[in-house]
Image (cartoon, rainbow, N blue to C red):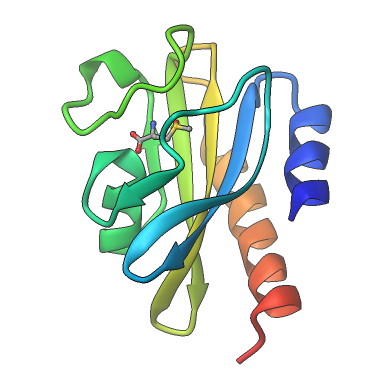
Length: 129
Ligand code: SME
């Protein structure tokens, strides 16, 4: 998982911070990350923040402007947009990929498609059913 977050961040210029959270005991716990600095949000309740919203709804969330999103939990002052893609094992959300960008409206349907494939590969590789 560390290799995956490093590869994503290295390959896409506007992926400024990339993390993988895994569900543990009903909470999202940061398992791997790559970026310029650590986040203080290493544990997030399901339903809290954009991360918790994606986990609760089991759907990818794209936020074009984090400053305009009520649920947003701020990690880095320079972040302007965010995408959160759930890791689904069957009907269960077992974690997610969370990416912050310093550019507004950075994430498009292409990012969603790419990251949903990466999410499926991660689940199949590490958490086969
Ligand atoms: N912004 C996230 C919190 C995690 S940090 O982006 C690393 C949220 O709103 O849930």
